[in-house]
Image 1 (tube, rainbow, N blue to C red):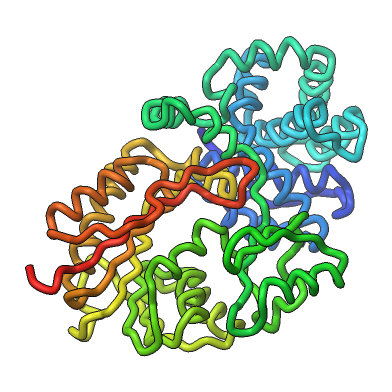
Image 2: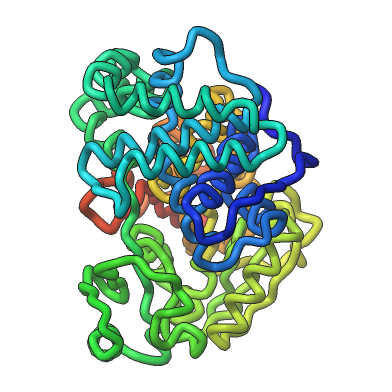
Length: 444
């Protein structure tokens, strides 16, 4: 499916404060998603080119993420209401965004405007865009038809598997095969907005003191486990008390387990492979005074590690390095290695709903092979008696459990107790991660 070219001008006569302006920005983002680009990168481009202020940017992001979570349904609804696929791609994306909000307005979430107001704003958005101006009547007709026939249209559309679950059919089938008892819960969790979970910096404060800071700021939160707090309502992180001072970081509760499972202590030599953006590296450093090397193959993403270390006032060596190679390694063995390997990220789709539409089934075997190469390489860098923690943010057994068993067998690794597969749940602060902890024998 074609999408709006990156060179397409973002011209519009709409003002930033209008819903139509925000719908149009979200539509540009969704059009690029359908062309194979991630939401974060597309949104950054849209914000810049449309010169969107903070409020408009927030609304565009919200609409785009909602639409990504409902894309299977709104695609099928549009197919039901049109004899031919509307062109260009931006027009389809604009209709997807509007239909998403109209569907939500009829279900669990009432939006702060009337449905016909949304229709009018969407029509205005089309009219304000030079190459969509002649589609305003079509936009009006489609959306008003949906309002008239929404019950029957949704009932008919959800007979389609992709529309029912808002995932590609292969994804639905694979989850059902892997988790015959839990597959519906897993899919539903991925369609729910994620909670905002923070990690309290143990070097600077306690969870009790930080909860008090939240209450003073008029914010609510609950202590879930160790240093994790789940916010009652998501807010921009810069509005959280103590953010700039490094009192807290944003990190899902599942991801916070890594530092504890590594069992680090002062003076140890620790490697965090595939480290960007650096959340786990920083948590390790908050736990103990270790000599930590953080590597990542993506040079651009190293900046995120540096930024996190600076904000939290922590020290580590950061280096570009490919975890399948040794050209960055000085030959000294590590006491602990964190291998948070590349994967399909199928366990974090509620935070990144675009992943389900960007991944292909073939990616699973490709990434599983890559993770095996990384693990085998890193194992050679671990001292006898040292521990290696294998982490994926995947729910696919081929990337997680099967990979762990294969690695342990091949390398004669001692398998230590760990959580194994954590499944995502809509009402919990945990994403879907897998953990396996290995110890290297003193003698092989």
